[in-house]
Length: 265
Image (spheres, one colour):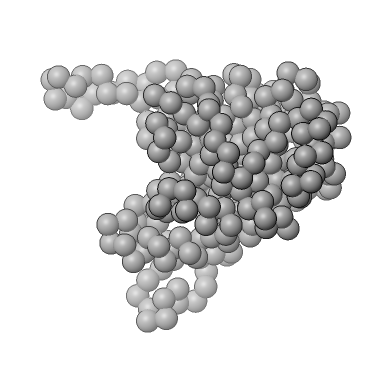
């Protein structure tokens, strides 16, 4: 089984040419779990796979990360085979903000009869959740306000920081199994995002060597980050991942017909 991370967009909210920061974890070349749903990122995702995401994790609700939801609603709601089947995993503290941003428009269809979340299988999550037999971990990041932005770990494979300032103590816990770390980083930091000086000051070399940087402001800034010795993500890039070591649920008795399962770490 092969795993990969495909970047649909790598830019900040102003870097339209780089696409909104969004990626998909792939398993055996197929989309497994998509992270965020920005407008430009969703366009790139649709162009590559030829279909809308079937499972999403939402890091936070700034519009460069959720502006694609209205388009996604129209795509899945009017497809009866997919209506209510697209899983949307949302940290519980983020859910009220997401609803206000994308779900609370009066009468989502002019003719009535529909709720925005009818199109999706909405799943609030806490510190962890299960997706297709694997356990993913969720952690709070440092972005604008407490409990408004979260990162994601598939243990042993990949960590996605979401938008954040440096979080060395958090990554010491949630990136301790050799994962690739997709990390928010621009050339210059600000009160809600990392700059490269921040990462070089706060993180040990071993951790920096596992980082691939996204959410930068321009292609030129990306080249400058690269010239400083850092790996940057590019729109459309697909990076191979290690096999996850996360706990998983596997069928153990395929011959007897019994619905038995075990959890392995």
